[in-house]
Image (cartoon, rainbow, N blue to C red):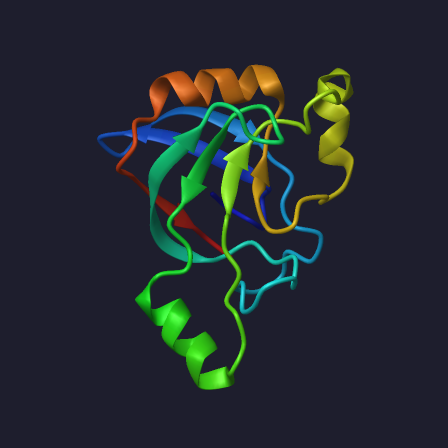
Length: 134
């Protein structure tokens, strides 16, 4: 994920397969620090589980917070947040389609259209590494 370009690119053996435009958290600049900051994390994580019945059309979980994120939060005395996902649109709002890209509206997640999420869901297995660039 390239946060500045607002894109998610699927790679296979370091070759781009497909690039999707995305919406991010409502305050996307910088690395996620704490629960409620609406930032999308930066760094390398893993897509470690999936939810076919989430509040948005399907979701793939990003393994944030990692040990470093948790240690930073512990030192600062706050919760790091969590449940960062790649997901489609809020259930019942699929009609928005590409219009959702006009603003960053998630709480720190990476959002795509429902049709795009169906493609990602089918091509990305659990355990896939994900890098989120500033």
